[in-house]
Every structure is written in structure tokens, then in C-alpha cells.
Length: 211
Image 1 (cartoon, one colour):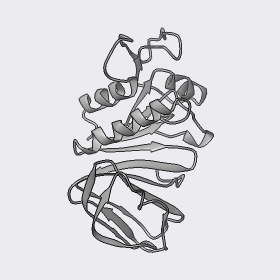
Image 2 (cartoon, helix red, strand yellow; image 1 turned 90 degrees about the vertical axis):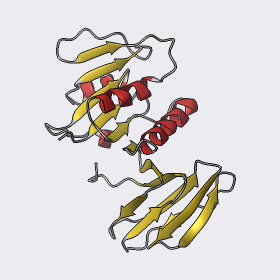
Image 3 (cartoon, helix red, strand yellow; image 1 turned 180 degrees about the vertical axis):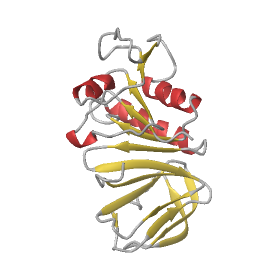
Image 4 (cartoon, rainbow, N blue to C red; image 1 turned 60 degrees about the vertical axis):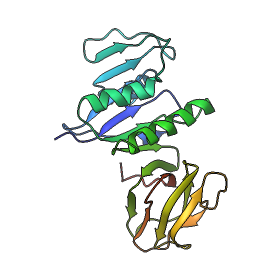
């Protein structure tokens, strides 16, 4: 059974981005993300991109997919689709933020693409994790601390419920033009966020043993 699909992008990386894939996992470098993997001796299975952020690699150890720079999909989305093609449904993205803001927004849209196709995606920043849920829920255990923020990515996300946090809501309609979901807090209890009809971006603290 496939495990996790790790994707390294060409954005900003941090020393604690180092991960240790198992034999059931796959590691895909989206263009310049390969440089981070090489620096930290992370074995890469596939390198995919138009190679605008690093020279074209000549290696016998990885599968290399050269993309036409004139394309509709970003390198990151192509990497995600390659992971889906290989049977993966759980995606962990490093180097997906920093640098160009438009690339960060595009990568959040990639999280939406995954969520709306019943898959899971996580983008790791220096101190936070971003994920998207669609017509579903996410749970956190009592060890979580700090702030958590929730934003509607649809015009309206209906039936939003947040439990076990400082501020609770039940069956709320959250809109994308009013940031009411910013800066909720974990309280040392098991907690959850769910939405009946809509898509939510969730930003919460990065715990370094939960990759």
C-alpha cells in the first residue's frame, strides 16, 4: 500500500524540513527542490520540472521528467499528479512557500485540488502547516498548542463547526470576505474542525515530530 508522497519545491526550505521516507513512500523533486534533497542526502525517486530554477540533471539514479516551460500546470501540480498516478493520496510539501507570492498561492490551490479530489495535502512552512479540507473534517489531539486559523476558500462554506478550542462555532456559514476564523487557540483538549459544504484553508503550528 502506498504511504506518503513527499514533494520538495524550489521555495524556501528550513533545516527541520529534513524527512526520512519509508520504503512505501515516494520522494518527488519539483524542479529546484532537488537541490535541497541533494544537500541533505534525501533519496529522490523522481525529478520533474521545466528546469528554470536549476540546470537539467543528468543522473542514472532518479527518473527525470523534463516539462515544456509553456504549460498550464505548475511544476508542483505536475509533481502532485505524478504522485497520484503512482497511487498516492497523502502529500507532504516542503519548499512550497517563500520567494514568489504567486507560487505560494498556486500551491495553496494545489492543496484545494487535492482536498476536492478526496486526498490530503500539507504545506510545511518554518513554523506552521497549511492544509485544506473539503466537505470533511480534521482532528487534533490534546497535545496541540498555539494558534489555529481557518479561512473559507469558497464564497460560502456552510456547516462549519469548531470544537475543543477557545472559540467554538456550530453549523456556521463562513465567508471568504470576512476573516472571522483567524487566531483561534488550542486549549489542551482534543479538537476538530469540520465543514458540511465548502472548502477551508487551515493554518496551525508545525510540530516537528508529526511529518
